[in-house]
Image (cartoon, rainbow, N blue to C red; front, side, top):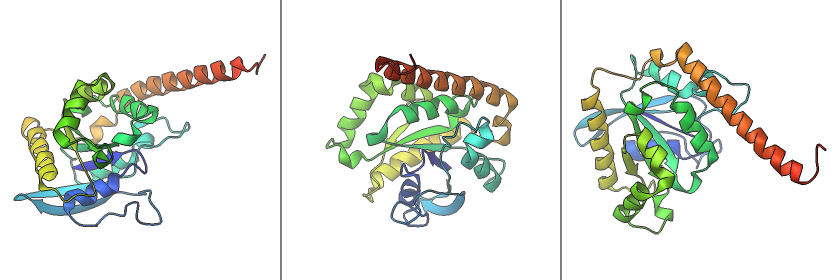
Length: 226
């Protein structure tokens, strides 16, 4: 499985929680941004798991292709050929902003990637809600509808400050569901195609146009550019 998300969003901490050891550099280290993929193995509930920590989504206008925007996903395939069965998308609940929506729109450009995705929502310890109540609120919220559709409602709540076996078992159940459903299919280099890049270019252009439109409205209201 590949653990992926925005830079500095707790991806490495989540990977450490999964393997039950501090094997990946996280926010406690001086350099909190993962620069290259790292794979470790662990045994959980009798299953041998391969876990890959990855560099995050790249926010750079110069980067226009799938390989440039998602270098960690491409590198992970090289580490576990022909590729991983599961992509764990780590999203902190306190940071569900425009950047995350943009990243998801870009991920949608990979045809059929969504069938490999499990969303891990972190920082649940900061919400003040119990696990069941919080999950119900997420499933009922319009703000999460796009995300839930993308991942097939496969959402696991994670508290990286806890050693709860419950969250680990819930994640493993979701992983088994994905693997059993698509046993013969992995996330391979075939996903990094010209068609993917064409779809990405349209998404990136729409995103840049929307940002430009907002900027023009803000500065125009102050009389700039007139």
